[in-house]
Amino acid sequence: MSAYLLRLTRIFLYLGLTLPLMPVQGVAVMFGLPLAERLPRIYHRWVCRLFGFKLAVEGKPTEARPALFIVNHTSYLDIEILGATIEGSFVSKAEVARWPLFGWLAKLQRTVFIDRRKSAAAGHRGAIVARLDRGDRLILFPEGTSSDGNHVLPFKSSLFSVAEYRRDGAPITVQPVSVAYVRLDGIPIGRSFRPLFAWYGDMDMAPHLWTLLGLGVLTVEIAFHPPVTIDQFSSRKELAQYCQRIIGDGVAESLAGRRPVPAAAKRRRQPKRPVQEPVRVS
Image (cartoon, rainbow, N blue to C red; front, side):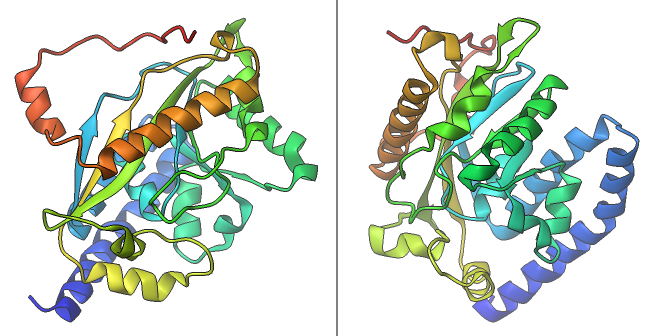
């Protein structure tokens, strides 16, 4: 199949999947049905298949409620990839709500939209805490922007203020997650070709997405690292530094090709283990 025909086929199938499910999700959100959390994960898994994304997952997301997933940010593709692996909602910059189609989809997944200006810090903390108080699971990109995929940008410790929130006297669970785009059609993606998938700086989305839709099978490695709580650290700044180090090391390990065993193969060979409890960080 030519790249042009592949692009048109993927767009047609994407719209054929997305448009009919939008009103279904809208009704589920309106009435607070359990389907409102389950359907997005099913939907994102199908989108990943349509776009040729092969997800290699190491570890598993915590089942704790509420929970805060801390993830590095490389591209708008992160939404599909994380949405396919985590039942939860995203924390996103306010302008995404105004994007055509993707803004509507974000609202249907109950995204928390925040203004990342320092003057609005108290407001966005309140919005996130309100959701955590309801037992929700939120996905946060603490870099504040997307990177080129070759390294992890510094984390904004101010965004970790929500980790200080306590529900019924107990600290919330915080789980670092690293995401790396590693192979195209089985061939390692070098530094110079990673911008084919990374979306950052002043890149325009439309031409970037058009190019991406004509490519082959993309392998993405997602690593769920051991969960922690704020009580294991002296401050939120120390928690932010810890998460940045763990996620940075995870991305570097993936880009260096040190995760050769696909997650599916690991699950076949290893017995099922209980959810890992938060570890003590010395």
